[in-house]
Image (cartoon, rainbow, N blue to C red; front, side):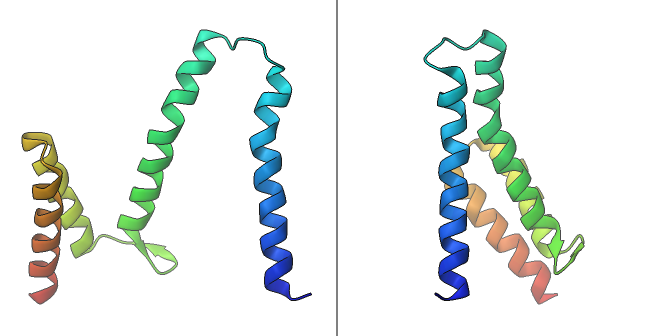
Length: 101
């Protein structure tokens, strides 16, 4: 069996185990209110962490570059207008302009 198959099988088993832990431990009981509040906030926190690491990642270091300024400009547009399309266009234009300079 190849190394890739073993790694994928191991990751699959780990993912299934992680997803099964919650229902097994809860056992059909209702979760407390604070637990539901934390679970609701996990997805946005994870998304924010992924965005931040992609924006500041430069190989094996964290750095500020044109993509960082583009994302910041897009965040400002999103905050002021709420338009996702305008947000994406702004990020692309600002990043491309800074890379061209």
